[in-house]
Image (cartoon, rainbow, N blue to C red; front, side, top):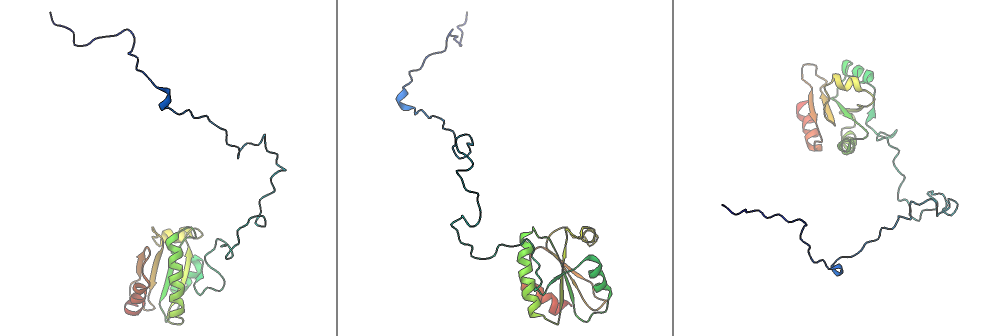
Length: 177
């Protein structure tokens, strides 16, 4: 007969445990969020006047197109009228969204480009959240998307998607339009 490899014990073996190696942690309630012990009158209402921080600049209003910007925000109908109308300068259409980080960076570059090409190019913006159907019809799938449309109707439009360097925009305007 063969001896059993396994041995079964009625109770698990006891290991000597020293309590000196363990630290006892007592759970303390968070007093910041207790409303029963702190009266609401004890804390003053939070406002910008009670904070000790000083604002360095005016907080953004949430819109990245201001009245004094050279690149104007247009509706879909206004852009279509520009494309169909008579122009003697290239048209650059920027499809953007206010929540898009690369679009904000591209807006800064387009403003510099608008200053540089003051009367030699027309740069406009279309908010894809406001003009969803138009953006879909123009096959805008990534932001920012730029369309470079030549004043010559025989030339094809050039489409770029994503953040592109300002020099690439200059090359397209100077060489391709």
